[in-house]
Length: 257
Image (cartoon, rainbow, N blue to C red; front, side):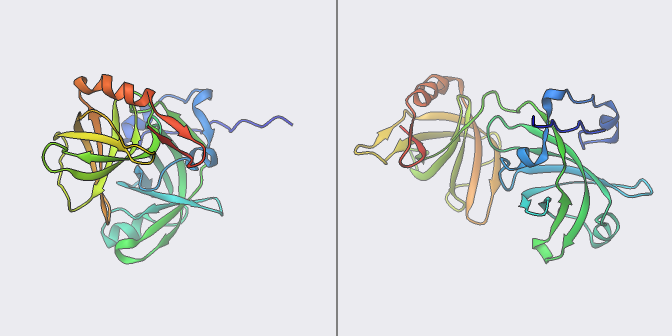
């Protein structure tokens, strides 16, 4: 029997504003995908923008982080910054929620969906809330100019001065994700960084040229600073050469230089 295509959502809208919700066009059939398929590829801690509406029409807008999937067709999200009154009023079982998740992998696709609040797990600053896994989602084209390859290569941040050890976990012809210990260096959006990518997994160490990039976003976890950067024009050619020289090692199941 042929696999049945997911039904198109009745209205899947950007959660930025009610006006944008009204102006959103119906998704094309090619952009509608099963929620289970889409969210299985979304990385934890991806950004989520959402709004919850009460039966009386009151709206709570917020941003939070995606945590993961529960086996009982539920999604886990971090509880956003909200007052105890807001949590009591808006985070009630059955209240509708509309949201947009930006996938950290690949091309940075935007995933729009609607769902409803199921449970709130109160754990102080570590609280979570669970929503039902949407049957269908609308997947918009990625935010990045080119999709990133998932890999993990060693690197040196500021190789001509500080020589901070780091790791490059994703890379495309236009940007990459740089991960380093959170106390090593502080970066802000707009800073220019220099980076050298290395591969010490083979018999000989292989290094790239020094690459220049501008910081586009910074995320801090308990241990790491994760810096999303876009390569400068002068570094595009050496980056393209580096990507061309990558090969996939079946034994280690990862890309190497």
